[in-house]
Image 1 (cartoon, rainbow, N blue to C red):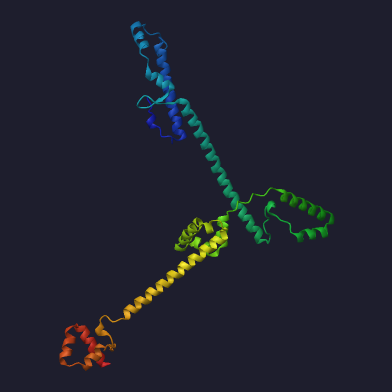
Image 2: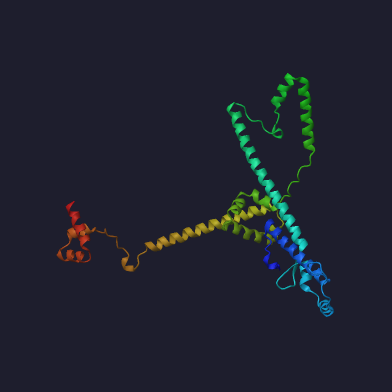
Length: 312
């Protein structure tokens, strides 16, 4: 029986690995029997006929298949071999993982039952008016409780207060986490309300502020000044640009409105706008020719709707 490396996927179950090892052991048994036959004995234990020429030829040509089978499972190309000890370790690993999985599953079931039991007991305590106790490490003694304890039990109260003082002293000596290093640039931006708002929005105003700040950093008159002063100048210039843009837009809109008010031709200068008559008024003052002209450009429904206005 032969085995191929390409048949292994690495996802075999422990049962499949164990079946594969059984097949390997069967092959090893066949190989041992073949080895006994080659040494001069048959499978039944009887000596075989001495064939000097055949044995000499077999010694000159090594049996690669037997060597491969002894080392492991050969691939199709005959060049790669997966050792038996690797398969054995894989089988043991899979067996251990399966045992751990079974153990976790059994514990999960127990944890679920414990959780339900705990919730049930808490409900029973609440129904009796008893609040469930918290964990000991979450319990804090207030100053009022210490005073009450000192009044009822002076010696015990004094001892407990002493212990609390020692604990507070010990905790105060614990090394605190080092503060994060300050960032002067970020601090200066945070102090400027305009820059902070523009940075959060991340729009055109913030891009303008970055461009102006680059210009100021390149300017010798501003490059050596404090960040707060430089950022204040940046905010002022951004606002000035914004006001200039708004003013330009207003002037453009006013110019557009003025151009719309101008007459299209010099002949229209001095003419006043006339009141546009409604179709009903035009029909009431029209002669027969005008009426025919009006009705020629209207549908029957429009004519009927226009005539119905005179009935109201």
